[in-house]
Amino acid sequence: SAVISQKPSRDICQRGTSLTIQCQVDSQVTMMFWYRQQPGQSLTLIATANQGSEATYESGFVIDKFPISRPNLTFSTLTVSNMSPEDSSIYLCSVAGGGVVDEQFFGPGTRLTVL
Amino acid sequence: QKEVEQNSGPLSVPEGAIASLNCTYSDRGSQSFFWYRQYSGKSPELIMFIYSNGDKEDGRFTAQLNKASQYVSLLIRDSQPSDSATYLCAALNAGNNRKLIWGLGTSLAVNP
Image (cartoon, rainbow over all chains, first blue to last red; front, side):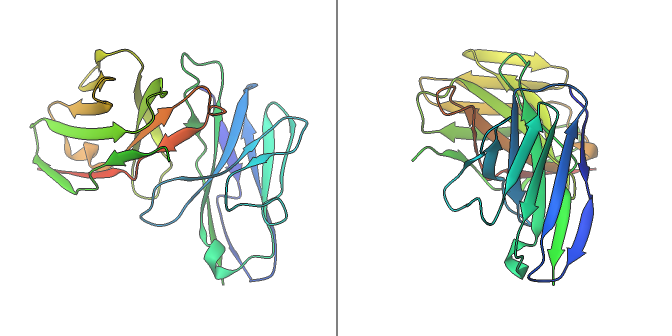
């Protein structure tokens, strides 16, 4: 499976600021996804990052709040904008493509705390 | 609304026993099913996937799929304390932009 890295691994931010999270894969992948996972909860899909075009957002998530870039097949960024304490969560990127059934593999996650 | 349901647990089993984790799904168009293990503070790790009716075995793990009943299960034989984690079930509908539908997870505790 692909090796996936995320930066930063954790951060503590002040409300009203923005944080950009990077996701890097060691091989080209078809699909990249961004998830949020709040403590004790399951995974919530934020958006699908599309290479060379605008991301596809899930209901409840908007581009102004969570702008996403995917300039190539191995890299994507998620920005959490104008943060509030409610944005405190773990943010995960996942990748798929090339597997038997497009199984998804996850990066290590970014733990974000907003004060 | 497409859903995947799991018993939240906690499921507690003694070391060496068989742990049985269950999952039902509502979307009959779902084609592939996945079991992920998530340790506290870590990201989900893919354990197994299954897409054909019947059983699929990998070491101590067996995934079972019954599409008629819309039911997926994961059996863990000879459970070890290191198996203690949350197990997430997910379903994939190829026509759904490759998005996974996730269950809420079942917490498993294996007691020494």
